[in-house]
Length: 70
Image (cartoon, rainbow, N blue to C red; front, side):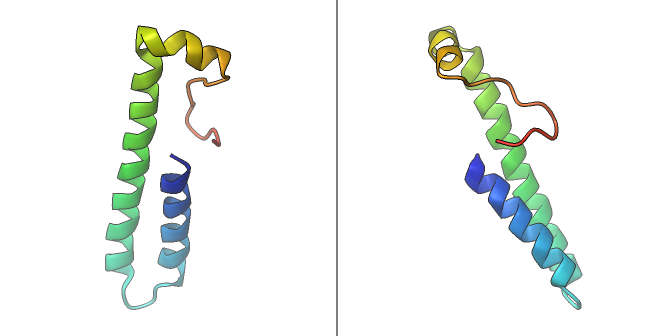
């Protein structure tokens, strides 16, 4: 998940720097944000599994809220 978050940040920086290729940079940013959302969704799904819930809780894993950092 951390790698996906870093990629979203990098794509946002590239979009700000893109002059003539804003459309391409926007498409890449949207794709990166989608990958990050999928990673967060799968993280939450994993925490819902009974055999993962207790170990995850004991190790400090919690549900992420919108805007939370990893």
